[in-house]
Length: 307
Image (cartoon, rainbow, N blue to C red; front, side, top):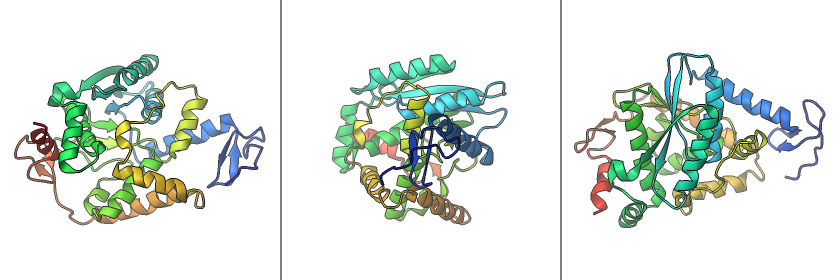
């Protein structure tokens, strides 16, 4: 859709960003205000951040997680809330760049920062991820994601954090809903939303403050406020199951600009219905004792396959 709007819909200055699903353009200042209002409203309506919280921030060096870090560090000023940022290091070709960017962002925001290493936690490398994914016939992203979530949850739990914030945006959520729908996986619908299910023993509740902001608008916001981030996407995602839906949504948005909002809205309604019925309680893995829906969790399965 070609943008022919030249003036801001709010203040009549020159429009710098066009929102096709609203049919209007915004200047830089009004665009920033819109996104900050969206994020703040999401936090307040869903009670994502409350006094007394201890929040672990999962950052990667990319635009989404660093926008999340920047916003939360400002939002909690003068509140009784503790935050700490964590980067999970796979020791890949992009690690040194990501760690440097994350360290600089945390220093500017005055946030404590820690690097968590795959090698130390699992004795797992990128070569092992590739080996396991090849044996199982799945994408590297699937293996990496399971291990990354485990180390973040375990670290947050052991260090006394009651919430784990991630940088998932509206586009990510729309992709996830489509993936779960195509799998026919109702159980996963129950776990989605602005925050995961209430705290259970051994599991740190996830929160997503950027969930109402499309990915391209997160990028524009990061650029407009002068945020430093690593623009290179993770190499694992190419060819992944999610990657197919990324391309599908981009094509659909050309004719249905608001499709991501619609998908997430109906997905949330399905999630509410699923949570009212039993979808299978989590249990402890027979091997490691961590929560899982299976007898033996995927982490233990992957660790056995790497040798």
